[in-house]
Length: 579
Image 1 (cartoon, rainbow, N blue to C red):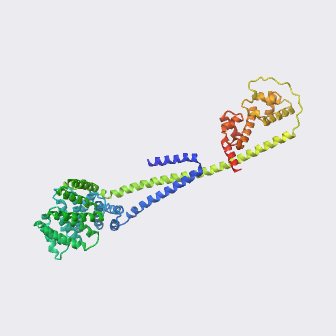
Image 2 (tube, helix red, strand yellow; image 1 turned 90 degrees about the horizontal axis):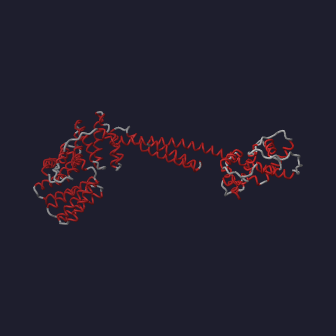
Image 3 (cartoon, rainbow, N blue to C red; image 1 turned 90 degrees about the vertical axis):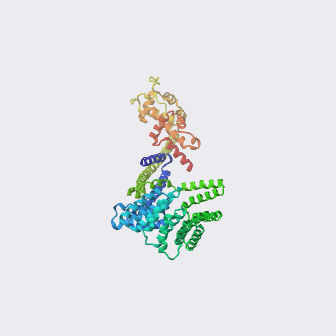
């Protein structure tokens, strides 16, 4: 289809060339060609990096992808991780871990940056299966934690859910014993806050005791563990104090990571304040929570804010405000696309083809290859067309020069004829009355086709022809469309037979041809007189010299001058403007 469009555009440009002239169209085509080259450069620039990235090792792709992700270059990171994850099926043992890591990061990217939870689930479940087969507990810890965050998005949007999938994956991540203490603190933090937020403290007590046994020095996570124990004993005031202690430790640290932890704890504190019936303090905490979400662009926190705010207004009896917040809650949920696609994850395990992990790169590659082909076709067509236009331009230039020379020659010829006519009039003595036979009556209906007779005296014929020329050159009657052989016969004072013989003998043509010659000459003179005839049309000029047939006039004019009447008139007008 694209090729057809290209050929169609080329045809339209060629038609345009005939309409607006070659000089202008060459400039237009040159501009188009420059644009095509620019577009091709852009296409090649777009395909250069993925082509180069295909040659990088999986470890290098992971490193580059994480760098892009940290710099908010999500699309570039997506390409890097997709290329690396696509190698998982054929990866060697020493490369398999890096491929699983790439698949994990691809799932994380889909979840956090694109909010495409379905594709995130695809990638994470593939990574989970591969990491289980490899037996790498560190990788499995990360994958379980990411799956917990993914399920959290789904289960938190369904009231009454026991959060079993979310808490279950967070617990698996914790018990995998990650080597990095900071990472293990994060796993425990998410596990405890999930239990506190959704009233599932009993499910996390074992992990809280294990964590505190290993961490004798208090930190922000141990304080949350104490808050969980207080909630289990329904001592909400003590739980709030523990959360405050945790917030103090978090505030002492800078960075987006700890800002996110603060957001979670403020929302948790808001819930606990509602438990002790302190709505205004809870509302203040909620506003600080939303302020941080907006500051760090955490759109996934908006639904919780509007949900909590709706409950607050409902408890205050303000149904209008509660409904407004509920509407905003649904709008925030809708903006995070793909939530409902995870429903079937609670029913059965998913089996996904590894090729889907590299789907984005494959589709992008196909599109770029197609675009490259189209650009080559357009560029080739533009080059061919440009070459054709250049050839046509040069040829047109040569033709224009030859037409100009023909016009100049015709001017010289007309000037020469005019000088000859004047010289003849000055030098020519009155012709003696040569004895001629009596005029014959016209016996034929076609006066100009009388057969010539070469037996007539040569001197007589020459005298008759000279009188014919005098009439043709000086009598305006010949430009009357009704002018005929009989009128010429009357003006010359001879007979049809002698006149026909004289014209055939000395002009080497018949009466009509000779008449057309003089009419065409007069037409040329009138075209050259732009001052008086410049506004005339070709048809008007033809009729002014006695020619009624436009086709016949054009044919005879071109035969005699080598130019069409319109071309001749154009040169005459141009010469008049120059003078």
